[in-house]
Image (cartoon, rainbow, N blue to C red; front, side, top):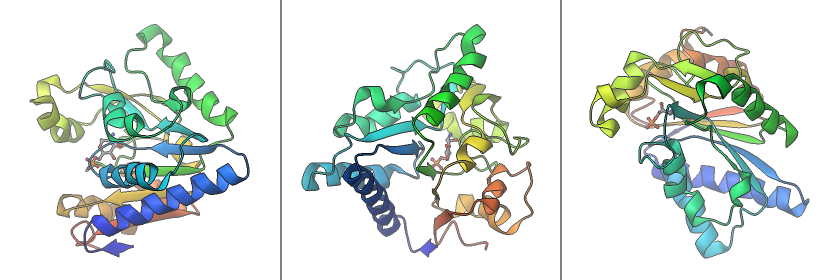
Length: 244
Ligand code: GLP
């Protein structure tokens, strides 16, 4: 779906998420959300915060799992996704701290493998992801599933692509400070979500979106795997859609 800019669709996505949270609450069920960082979802989070403050939308039944985190990364660091999520959403709504799950960028290397398995088990234990919000990187990554990621991949550590590190460099005041690794949910984890929305704004994403939407499914552009998911919507602005 193509919109003129990101303002209107961000509100519509927030409304879909809010409706899901309320529907689950009315059935006394938890609502399990997979969440993304980056600039793309910021306005969605802004609108959810507004709905909480002005319309009483409650996050008391919400359980969240974030897609990814840099590795290594201290959660107090302003570049961490932990910090981002608290700044843009969690600090402003009534979600229970124990219901927030973000990969821990400080887990020790010897515990990392088991940590990733446990992250998957936690998602399964609460019934799987009801909804997954995604952005897309210029390499075609979703989460941090860089080119080469397998269809059945699950939460694991991954080496970041050079282009991804270049794109992250401004936030880290130079590429040398950008971590070389990350922890990310896998493609299989993302595709297990019952509903997926990918957001992309701006012409610098237009090339990768053309490949993602019109190209062959390939591990070289991991976002192409979404073509086989039965309930995914791509929401683009005119810039991001300009090469379709
Ligand atoms: C990072 C995140 C991705 C995100 C991407 C796009 O690489 N790990 O999950 O989709 O950035 O970011 P932006 O939305 O700022 O373009």
